[in-house]
Every structure is written in C-alpha cells, then in structure tokens.
View 1 (cartoon, helix red, strand yellow):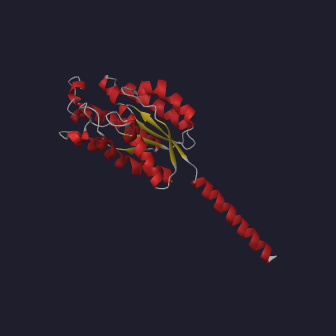
View 2: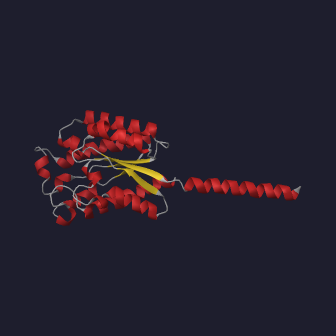
View 3: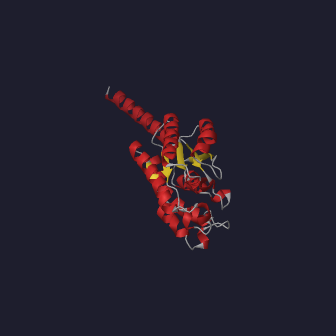
Length: 226
C-alpha cells in the first residue's frame, strides 16, 4: 500500500511539473501598436525598438514572437482605432505595447479627445487580451529637441504639451494597474546630438531607438515574468 501511494505521488509530481513547464514554454505573441516611433522611422526596420525588444526577451528565455507591427508614420489615436485594432483582432496577441499620441498633439487634438481615444484603445485591447495586464504603455518622446522639431510645434511649447499628454498616459495606466516605460526624459538627449537623430532631423536614429529599448525591455520583462 505504501509503495502504491509513493508511485501515485511520483506520478502526480511529474504531471504538475509537465504542466508548469508547458505553461512557461508558451510563446508570447506580441503586437506593437503606435506610429512612426514604433515602426522605427529613421532607422532600418530591423533596428526598430519592438524588434530589439523581441530579441532581448528571447535572449532572457521568454519565448516571444513579434506577430504584427501595424504602426505607420503620422498615425494618431484615431488612425490606430480605425486601422490597427483590426490587425490586433487577427493577431492572437497575448502582449501589447502602445506608444501613441505625438501626432494628436501636432494636429492640436485637445486633451479631452486624446483621453477619450486612449481610453477606447485600452478598453478594447484589455477586453480581448487573455491577461488584461499584458499591456506596456510607452510615453511620447520629446521631438521638440530635434533640429526639425520646432517646425511642427505651431509656436507651442513642445515639451510642456507632450508632458500633458504623457501625464494622461500615466494616469490611465495607474487606474488600470498597467506598467509605463517612460522614455520622455532620456529622449531629450537628442538635443544637439546628431548621432541620436535620423538624417531627417526629426526622428530618432537607430542608436536612439536602442537607448529607448533599454528602458522598455526591463518593464516588459517584469510583466511577462509574472
């Protein structure tokens, strides 16, 4: 009887171990939602930070596949709603990064509309994700410090305006218990540093995208390690 009990115990232990192992071996299906900053304008597609993030997560043993990056130049929150959420629906994504808002600000979209659209996006994504906490929000970088940034300011203070939008991002994340990777301050290093800006004088260079990813990666790792 004791021998039978021991055998059953061993079998149960193996089953539990295999179940745990299979769960940890599930591939994270990652979609990156956003605009030019997410698609990597100013650098090669292979140098965009979502590509780097995917590589580094895999290097850390978190099996990750970048299943889609529908981000495009000039996209606003409304463009994302109209064109990217359908891609999200088809992707089967289990992890999402979201960096959106710079073009809303450039087009003088008011904070009320931006907040409304951001809430819509987060509600939509959270409702369909298997784990509603698997969203990483990224703050909007300060393009105003770039050589061409002033041309898109419409005589407004870029830093102050984007800070207001970033505070909305942080507030919505806090309400939902979501994580934020804050790249705003480090993006200011693009000022007077040609190595950190693309030839167009507006977008980040591959080097700058890589710097952003050093802040985004640890936050993503924490989310996916829970």
